[in-house]
Image (cartoon, rainbow, N blue to C red; front, side):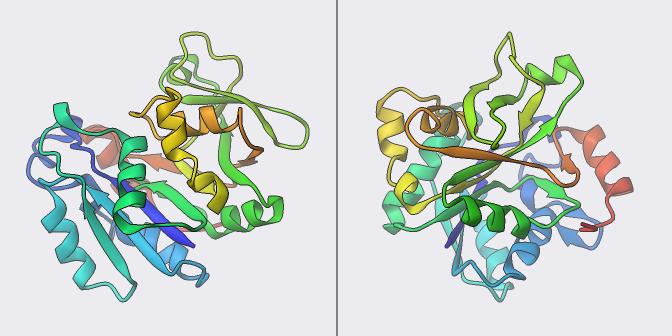
Length: 245
């Protein structure tokens, strides 16, 4: 299994911290955000390669970080240099698939969140379902719903519908940026792009995929700490205690 880490954004809302430095390498406690994610996932021994998708501006920072990690980590530079010219998450995934010739199950995750639970439980859930999977959590704040991927599921957790940033969300089930693609569904990313799925938000591919293949949504077993701006970063640094679930 490959773990693909989305890290090609420019984090403009965190300026000046991220004007010349990537958000995923900011420290939270004694580790960088990426260290928290990779060290957790690697504990299960299921991933044979980590692929960090970066923009050209920050690729060298990730390459320096990777040199000090024991895991097999490949940094893919998507060639963009500004927020205005970014490819978008879905096109970044396909770019890395093509560049590295990936043909495998994939755990696809955002590189700018920390979690208080292990992602290995999510991988186990996906393997039990033998299908592509996402996570979901209940969001009571209606304003926050407008900025999220929102899913409708049946009694067996199967995703019936997913929308990204809908002005009229149908449920309160939000989808965080952590996904499991089966090998077969990893091969469909390009088709999804050609069929017109959104390419900026990573969940846009899942919104299309659930109309083609079974996709299941596991209830998130803990808390996700999203670092979106300077205020939220300070909050995460003060509150995050590591993986407890």
